[in-house]
Image (tube, rainbow, N blue to C red):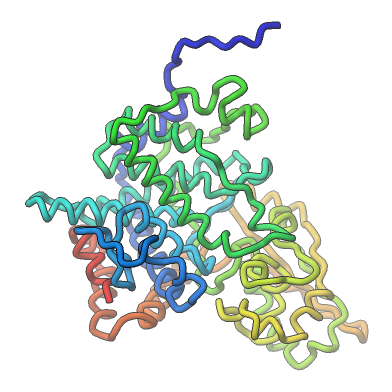
Length: 483
C-alpha cells in the first residue's frame, strides 16, 4: 500500500476556522459574563500581587537581559518593569499562576482559563500605549473583558470532552491555543491570520505533564502557563509579519496533531463551536479560600469543619478515609516524601492534613518550615483515598460540575466521627452569592500586600464599578498598579 500523501495544499481544518470565526464574529450579550470577567480580572491580579511576596517567583520576572528598556512597553502590575509584550505576557502569566490560586475549569481536561490574561493584558496594554503615543484611541477595559470571555470559552470548550492529560500533554496547550486566537485579534489580525496563528500553536511542541506528577513535581508548573501565553504572543506577532500557516495542522495524515499526539482521535465538541458564547466564563470556578489544586478544595473545606473536633486528638487518629472522585485519585493522591511546595499543593493528603492540624491553609503552609512539622506526614500516612462512582459522575455532569470530597476520621479507640461531605466548593457557580463577597475581600487583602491605602482604594473603587471600569483605557488601568 502506498504511503504517498497528496501535495495539494488543503483548506484549513474546520476547527481552526470555527475558532477564528468565533473570535472575530461572535457578539457577547451576556451581562453575567462581563460581571464574572470583572471578578476574574480582580481575582487574577490579586493572585499576582500575592505571588510578588515570593522570591521564587520574583527571580523569574523582569527583562531577560537586565537593564533592557522598551519604549512604550507593557507595564507589569505591582512592579516598575516595562517590557516587550512577549516577556510581559510571561511575567504576568507567571505571577497569576504562581500560587495555584486563580480560577479553574474542570472537565475531561482541566486548567485555569485566567492564565490567558498574561497575554491578553500584556498585548492590550502595549497596543494601547502605542496608540496613545501615535495620537490614536487605546483599547478600553470592555475590550479586554471581551477577550477574556472568549479565551475562557475557547480553552474551556476544548476541555469539555478532550483529555490531553490522558495522552501525557499538559493543559497549558489550551492556554496557548486560546491566547493565540484572541491576541492575534487584539493585534489587528484578520480571520485568516488567526487561522494561521492557531495552526502554528497546534504544530508547536507541547508541554508534557512531567513537572506536575510524582516523582518529578516541581516549580515549572507555576510558570508553565506564563510560558504558554507568552509563546502565543510570539506566534501571533510572527504571523502578523507574514509568516505562513499550516492548514491541516490537526488532521494531516501521519504528521498532524491528531496522529502524532492525540492517538489518531479528532476533537469532540458537545457544544458545536458555532454555538459557543460565554458558558465557560459564566460557570468558571473561583479559588477563594485555599491556594490548592482544585480537586482538593472541598477536602480542605471538610478538614476545616473537622478541625475543632480533632485538633486535640491528632495523635489518637487511626485512619482517615477520603471519599473522592476519579480525577482526584489520578492527579493528587500521593504517598511518600514531598520535596517542594509544588509537590505539596498537589497532594490531597497534605491539603487535608494542614487544616485538620492548624485550622488554616495558606500559600505559606506549603513552605519547608511548615512541612517540617512531623504531624503532617504522620497524618498523611493514615489517609486512604477511595473513589465514589457517584462523585465521579457528578464531576462530569455538565449541569452539576461537582467536585465532591468526604472525610471520615476514625480513632484508635474504635470511635469515629460522622463523615463530613462538601459537594461544591465555595468558588462554584452554585455558591456565587456566598463566594463573591469573600472573593472581593481576598482582592483587598492582596492589594494591601503591595500598595499604599490611597492606591488600594482607587483600584478597588474602579474594579467594583462595572460601567466605569469597562470605559477605562487599558493603559490607564494598568498604570494604577505601578509601584
